[in-house]
Amino acid sequence: MNRLAAAIFLAVVCSGCPHRIEFGPEGPIDDPEKLFSLVSQAQANLITIQGDAKLHVSTPQGSGTLSMFLAISRPGLLHMETFDFFNRPVAALVSDGQRFGLYQTEGNTFYQGPASPENVSRFLPVVLPSEELVAVMLGQVPFIPAERKTLELDRGEGVYVLKLFRGSVTQTLQVHTKFYRVVRSEVRGVPGYDLAFGNFKQEGAALFPKEVKLIAQAAETELRLRYSDVALNAPPDLTLYELAPPEGARVVEVDAKGREVSPAPASPSPGPPGS
Image (tube, rainbow, N blue to C red):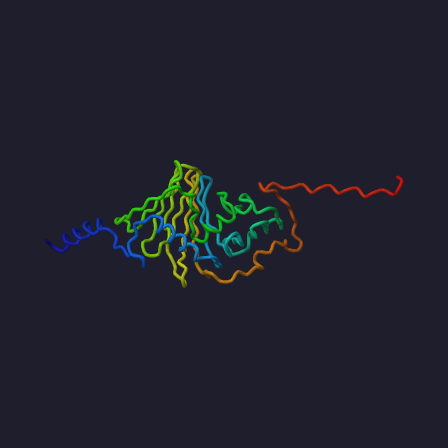
């Protein structure tokens, strides 16, 4: 067999080889409840993140990429700033989990109101509650409340396949065999979204995906968040979550659906006694 033929043969053979599997300190796991517990613990190791990122949005209406500065802290603290191509501020959204504020430089307008899913998701084409949005941006998967679980080892992909079941709803989790972090989540049987995580970075006890992808198939929408220079688990700077409007900005109150609330009419001043 000449060298070229040998190289082609080896490439074909190796392309079908299973991934080399590294297991964590627990060794191979065959109990779904035990793996689910380890996954939950691994996700809980990350509490805060602060730094720069790029958000790519693809929808049927079009696609584009934004530069962002993010400061996120569980359970529901959000600070997101977006910038244009020339790195000029475009908008800033802040939420303390109860109230939100959004400042838009164009129009010098500050919107404020309850931290409802519609309000905290204003930068996104999908609507998520603040705690769920924080979890996803931290690379964590919201789990369905499972009635039962199954577990398999996919040697071809080199991952655990943990399935959660609740009635006709299923959630399939591909889990890293060494670090117990979810690398992909797919929910079926109910409107929802899929998640994929990659380019993991380890800092102390925390393992963090620098790439987060959210796919909402029903809406034909995909979000890709790529972190660049970030700090993990630093004490949160609470001043970043203050809701005061910038001086001189026009302030607009909105309701939970994001609709502008008309100012209440001023109460008439009481007349003189006996009038």
